[in-house]
Image 1: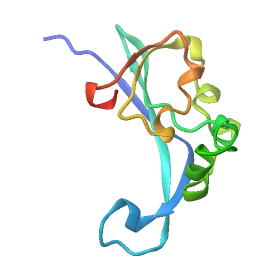
Image 2 (image 1 turned 120 degrees about the vertical axis):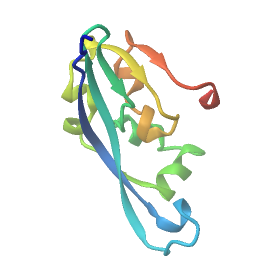
Image 3 (image 1 turned 180 degrees about the vertical axis):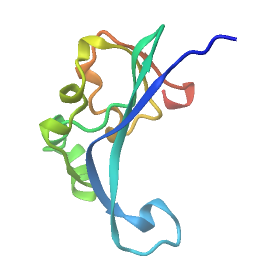
Image 4 (image 1 turned 120 degrees about the horizontal axis):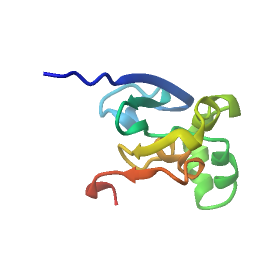
Length: 125
């Protein structure tokens, strides 16, 4: 049997601060840090695949006005340009994007990979 070697590199493009009790019922009313994680999958046949894309600095522009400003007030986001997926991998190398779900910390960099085939579940759309 032949083996296919696939590599995985988990990255972070910023984080948000949110109340623990908003995420898990019964947790304390303290703010906790949630990393915006995403991953690079290097597949020998399919090429470079991203699993999610993390935040980008576009988040700040998108959430300046109502109603998106509510998101920014409830969830404090920190991301630098160096942390963005497009700064960590050449967008032209990415063949596929797999999106776990459609929250800003998972799809924020979607526009940076216009040539990639995008995959998500029917439940997401």
